Amino acid sequence: MNTHKRVKSARCGFSLVEVMVAISIMAIAGSALLWGVSGAMQTTDDNLQQALALGMAQQLMDEILGARCHAIGSDAYEYPMGASPWEKSGNGRERYNDIDDYNGLRCSPPVEIYGTAIGTGDDSGGLRHPGFRVDQDYFQNWRQEVNVFYVNAGDFSVNLPAGSRSDYRAIEIRIVRDDPDSDPRVLAKLRQVVSYVPPL
Image 1 (cartoon, rainbow, N blue to C red):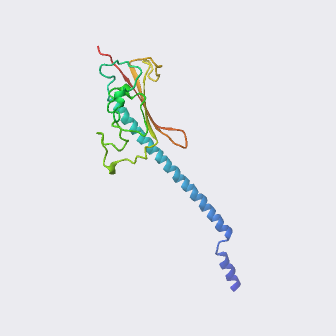
Image 2: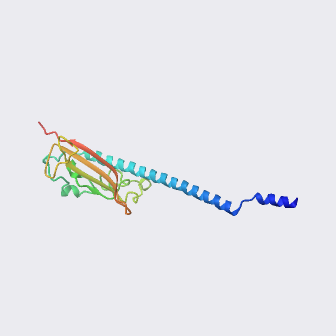
Image 3: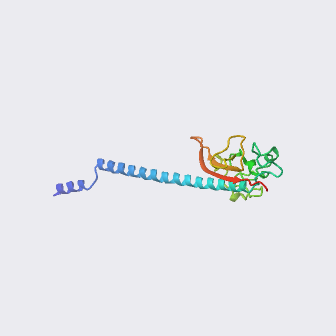
């Protein structure tokens, strides 16, 4: 009777092989779960960056569209386009007064109209309270790019060659993130066509 009880109690435990198989299954399931969570977090971070970049691009587009088509007293078909030395000598873009001034704009890290880093300015040339500022390292590898082109009057998707002019201009804005481990990544891109209507 004692022999029978010993055999029965020996069968209630797990063998070393069974324990190793169970641990292996748990390790595979755990790594698959962690891989899925990591992928979801990366997707969430990518979506956040794209949303921020789109808002940044739209804010810059609104700023440009609020400017004159051309400077007072200057030619509406100015070429080459770009800011004058006086316009560039401001703290930021506060002296830009017409659309062509923004052509060739490159800001890394991105800045607001008064030259303060995005997320730190108070929209008057000063700084926000420190508790309301964005961490400056967040946008460190980001870049704002603006190009302005004359476009074909019959097909706005066609940029005219250098030196050619029309009544239509395309404003292109790109928000790019420079990644030291890979190629630059375009987070947001906007294109808007505006027209010049000559006075009668």
